[in-house]
Image (cartoon, rainbow, N blue to C red; front, side, top):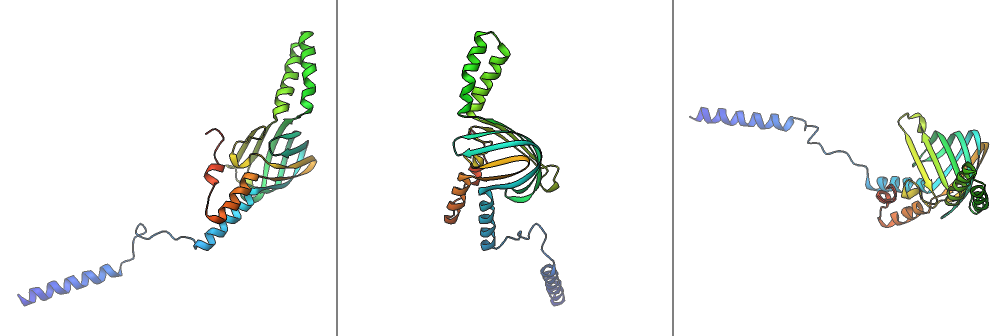
Length: 214
C-alpha cells in the first residue's frame, strides 16, 4: 500500500511539473497593447493631420477654387498626380476632379434661361437652368486613387454646397489653383474641433467619418 501511495504521489508531481513547463497557447496569451501615452500621442497626431488638406499636383487641366465655409466658388476639370496629406497619411496618389460653383455669377444664367424659353430653344434653356442651379449650389466630384501605390485605395467625395460625403470634410476654408501644376491649402473646421476636444478625452471620429443624413 505505501508503495502504491508513493508511486501515485510521484506521478502527480511529474504531471504538475510538466504542466508548469508548457508554454501558454496563443489563444491564452493576451494581445500586446501600445503604451497608453504613446497611443494617446498617435491619436493626437492623426487628429492633427485630419485638420489640413495640403498638397501639390501636376497634370492636365485647370482649376480655380475658393472655399469659405458655407459656400464655394470655382471651376475645375483636372487629372493629376498629387503629393501631400490625405486621409491621415502623407503620400502620393492620383486624382480626378470636376467642379462647377459660380455663385453669385451663376445668376447671370437666369435671363439667358428665360430668353431661351421664350425663343423655344430648349437645349439652351436646359443648359442655362443647370448652370443657374448647380452653379449657385456648387457641385464637385472628386475621386482619389492609389494612395502610396495601393491599388485598393479609393476615396470618393461628392460635394453639394458645403456638404461633403463625410461630415469631417464639410465646411472647409481655403483655396486651390492649378494650371498644369498647382497647390491646394484647406482647413477643415470640424476636424479642428475634434483635435481640440481630444485633449479632454472626447472622440468625434465616429461621427466625422459618417455620411450626412445617415
